[in-house]
View 1: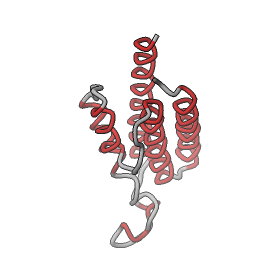
View 2 (view 1 turned 135 degrees about the vertical axis):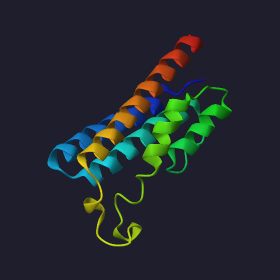
View 3 (view 1 turned 60 degrees about the vertical axis):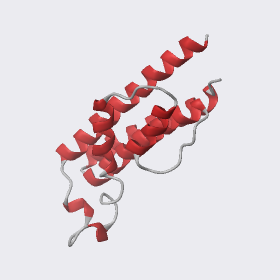
View 4 (view 1 turned 120 degrees about the vertical axis):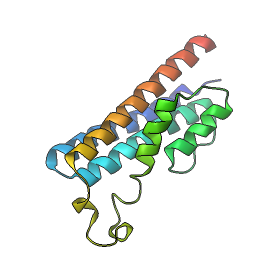
Length: 139
């Protein structure tokens, strides 16, 4: 049985976080735009997991997707690639000690942020597509 309430709650948070990443992109806070894009994708995948009643722990999007595979659902290679791109943004976008010198904001560009946002948008669209399909099957 699908849990529409939990799915919707988590997906709304994912979309609001993605919106915030656009604000950081436009403000030139590229490291934060990257981090928020990662967070939005994580929330979207967790929305699907919660909706399916599956565990949703951790911050690695690519690992979270393995939980979806355990339910017998197919995860396209492209979605896995987007997830792995975003996984690399979880720590170094925020912590100065992730870098040998300097601070995170010195290492990220507009192009990095735009790519992270693109990856996240694709993951969210995929999550929504899977959810619609599951709802049709349940009906």
